[in-house]
Image (cartoon, rainbow, N blue to C red):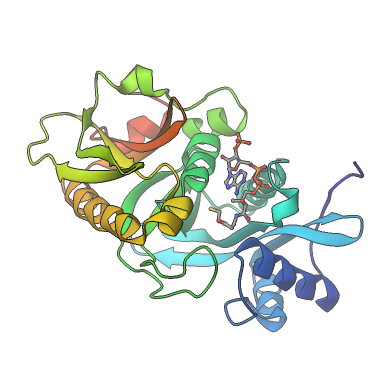
Amino acid sequence: MEEVLFVTPDNFALLKQIMEVMVDAWSMPDYAEALPPHIMKAILDNGGFIEAAVHGGRVVGFVLGFIGYDPEFGYYHYSHMLGVRKEYRGRSIALKLKLHQREWCISRGYRLVVWTFDPHQGLNARFNFGKLGVVSRKFYENYYGEIADGINVGLPTDRFKVEWWILSKRVEKRVSGHDTPPSYDEVKDVAQQLIHTERRDGVRIPTAISRDIPSELVLLEFPGDINSLKAVCFECALRWKHVFREAIQSLLKQGYIVVEHVSLLEGEERRNFYLLTKSPLDELLEGEYPWR
Ligand SMILES: CC(C)(COP(=O)(O)OP(=O)(O)OC[C@H]1O[C@@H](n2cnc3c(N)ncnc32)[C@H](O)[C@@H]1OP(=O)(O)O)[C@@H](O)C(=O)NCCC(=O)NCCS
């Protein structure tokens, strides 16, 4: 395959092509939810970062971020969008875009990159926690209200805010491939499962939440594939959202940190979990694993 090039989109033709990638990557029905080129130009010319992945003269992926600030973190880079055309997925294009973004941020003195993502999207969870080494301490209910794209339509836009501490040992070990997320077997006996589930009519649904949490480590289940669950049982997908909300809000209030995505293949069934710990953030960023 011809090489994929990574470039700064420094003209309107490239910025317009990024808009096309947005429409494809998020299955948008039209351009209403896409970012117009003049906003991208403003971001690019005022301390933001946009990089395009180009194959055969055509933009096939991009990452876009700008400066952020809050009193707790100080200044950080806020990464708002990362998208790759469907036909180009699974070729590490997104990973390379994030690694370039990390280098760019380090060279400009940032220590932290922040973004939000839908906690029910298992592949995104794997990418963010497993490959990049983010952690999360914040969850928002219906963060954007209703978004009319193919991924979000019909369900509340609940989001994790994730922190990517780009200079930390944890991130360094993950992005260099020296470290991988734990397997289910590695943590199942030391972490307590908070959401109880069962399979009914061919789909897994949440049945109860444990009220007492004596454990320092918690496994929080979420759907194996929310996109297909939504198609076969919309009510089940909604129920997952509500049960997960209740459980995660309570854990974060008690000081737990979301630190890993753990995946399990049981026969044909994919199951997804988050692993949360009460360990201090500093220890986690040093690359320590309370379960090892
Ligand atoms: C998320 C996304 C950018 C990944 O792009 P990509 O170029 O396929 O990602 P990479 O090849 O670098 O990495 C693949 C990893 O991403 C994850 N991933 C997330 N979504 C995926 C998808 N739809 N298909 C394949 N892998 C996906 C997997 O963990 C995979 O890891 P693996 O290769 O070890 O199995 C792309 O699927 C996309 O544009 N999705 C829609 C927009 C979106 O959700 N953006 C927010 C991301 S937080």
